Length: 246
Length: 246
DNA sequence: CGCGGGCTTGACACGCGTCAATAATCGTGG
DNA sequence: CCACGATTATTGACGCGTGTCAAGCCCGCG
Image (cartoon, rainbow over all chains, first blue to last red; front, side):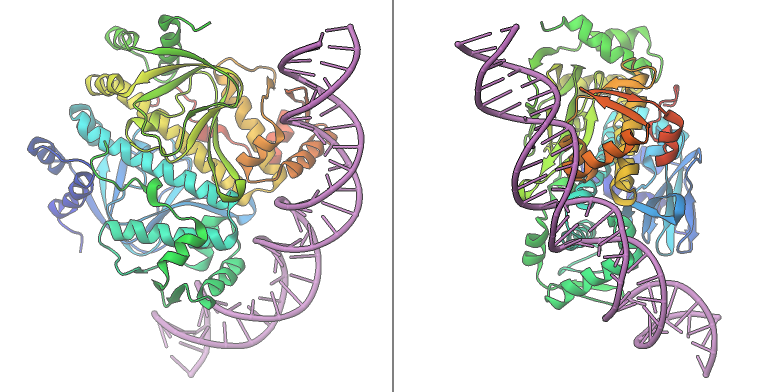
């Protein structure tokens, strides 16, 4: 069930080309990357805090998230990742993991050795720039989450996250018509937003009762996109999805 | 009062060399960067949300911060910056600013054109890697702030920030003996931590009353470092100050 | 068909926000 | 060197948003 290397790297090439055109030489260099495919179950760690990984992980299928555990069992989720993402790309330049990465659903990933990535980026500054940019977008999303957690009400924060996920999924063709599969538990949402699972539940009911969304069996339908984005002041600029921006 | 170019770039070189040794050629290339010095008053914007800057800003003296304004006058501060930092390095690869940068105190900065930085990083992958790494450390700090805002109590969050600032300042020689100048208002701290200025005040008094810190006239003295770090579970790993890590 | 994880709901408590009034501090100009 | 206005810090009273605890429900899976 593990996809062939060619298929895997096509996913990466598509992602990079969504930002900036690649030369034939660059494309060929990427295709030569030595990768290892792997199938993972849900809720399984890929890298752990304090690890010193020697490879990065390209997500091909399924969802993953980055998180940290605190004393007293509290958890903070930093980001959710979808196919095409490299959640631990930062480990290329930061030796020690300061957080963990785990699967949310079952997932297919491709591991790429740091060594190969370092050679690739040294030889092709254009590719380095796109990958660098990708980590900068991560940073932009972290910032937006900070304002969500710090300065938005629970209702605004939940609405904002649902909008963000839709826009990200839509951009890679995994969502349309303001609907998508949402494989997160309410506790996951809470750990991402600094809320309790109970309060996430109340908040979702609120959104449902007001006819803004329909959420059932892991399928989310945003019924009134305009009102939802208005409610939480959603502005997708921070996702930097505009092309040709390197 | 604007420092000479040579002086400015020495600051950048020192910062880069604190991470990884530079070759003579690399050092010379950095020294050739065309820069413009400037002196700024406190509380003055350097770049604004929605701007499309064509240069980056190297902070030589004083403090700066990155922030975003929300409707209803709320503000979220994303980071504080000290001499040697390039707060808007991300603008090199993300065209549109999704937040603003402003001075906290009066400050001296050097502007470096994007074009020059792009040429530098294309020619010297080693320099590109160090700069990339720098933006990754920013990201790591963003993550830590997320858990501070989302999952720590006000007391823990304030303590954690005070520890972080000390370690960062100490690393560049701007603090020692667990003491430093803290030019932030209580409202600034609150906007960074998702708290009200009033509650920051209560929290600081709490820390003072318990003999952990002395804070007066912008001078902070951490009287019991062990207890303060213990209180908030501070672990400096996420600052990635260890050398030779690229 | 029974088990378990996730969802839902209610009751209650508390941390933190808000409002407001006063005191300390600082920069600035006379 | 002092007076003044403008921030900033401080404190108290009060309320609300969200957390916590606990119980029951639903549904998918073995």
